Amino acid sequence: MIDGDTIQLDRTRVRIWGIEAPDRPAAMKAAAGEYLAQQIEREGGVTCATRPSDNRAIRRARAPSCPSALTSYRRTVTACRFKRSGGDVGARMIAAGFAVDWRGFSGGYYAASAAQARADRAGLWRSNRFQMDDLARQRGGGCRSKTK
Image (cartoon, rainbow, N blue to C red; front, side):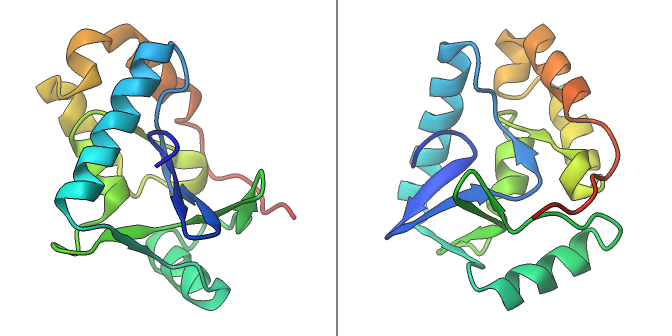
């Protein structure tokens, strides 16, 4: 685990698709990273669609109108699932209040879960509501054009 939206799988650094966990302030970044690390440990690890064909198929199914790059800052951007439960890592991070829906990539795939986490004041929404609101606003725009 690197932080709340990036993990290391063997030699591959993976950026979890469709979400944004806080990078600032440091305490929020640490809390999101710690929560993700706890979930990964509890679930016996994660599996991620690192093969480009699998990655594209997931993106087409989830956000067909939001094409986006398969890599960002030398990280593979893709969806991941927990090994034990099969649960979506991005969905859990958002529902628990440690990340927001990055609509520029997700097309609003996680919007309902994000709204519920905010209403419930889950996770960071309880102690850092204004910062989470700012992050959600920053990442709330529509789909981005595909880049190389």
